[in-house]
Amino acid sequence: MRTTAAAGRRLARRVLDARVAAMTPHLSLFVVPAGGWVRAIRDALGMSAEHLASRMRVSATSVLSLEANERSGRVQLSTLQRAADALDCDLVYALVPRQPLDAKVRAQAVKAAMPQLSRVEQTMLLEDQRPSMSDVDELRREAIEVAINRPGLWDAD
Image (cartoon, rainbow, N blue to C red; front, side, top):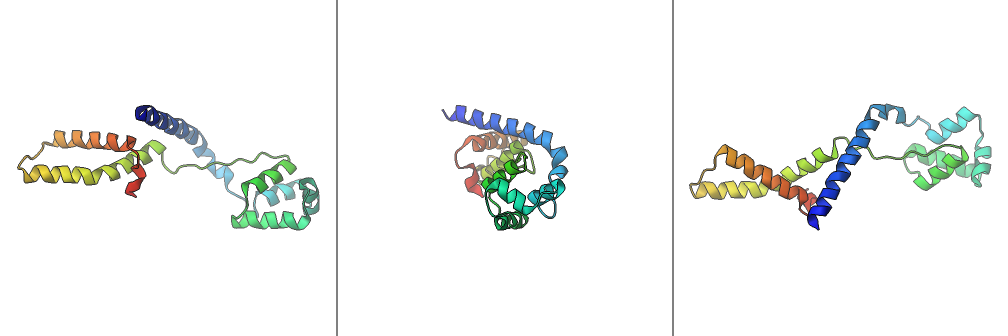
């Protein structure tokens, strides 16, 4: 069961990493205009706040509040979706990892495995059993793979 779940997570990371890699060159296109997307689209269409309010079935004050909330980063996605529909637009929402997910998980696994590796190496040194570099490398690789698939990977934070 655990192996299947780990394989599923690994596949999900790879699929998401591929999607993000395709989006990354275009991220600059999604920089939010200074006044927010709703205001920018509404202005470009020549649509008044009152007209958008009518299409959204809210008051003009609510539209102005929506635009202010978007500028301040406090807007709700459901409200943005309603505005997008009223403006005949699609709402695009994504979290774009700053580094590949596989690399992030591997870095966390290294962090989680290090205390255990340090204890093992210390014990071996105390017992005058200095491991070879290849043994240390193999032990490190195995500990990282175990950590990647172990529940609680992110407990090391």
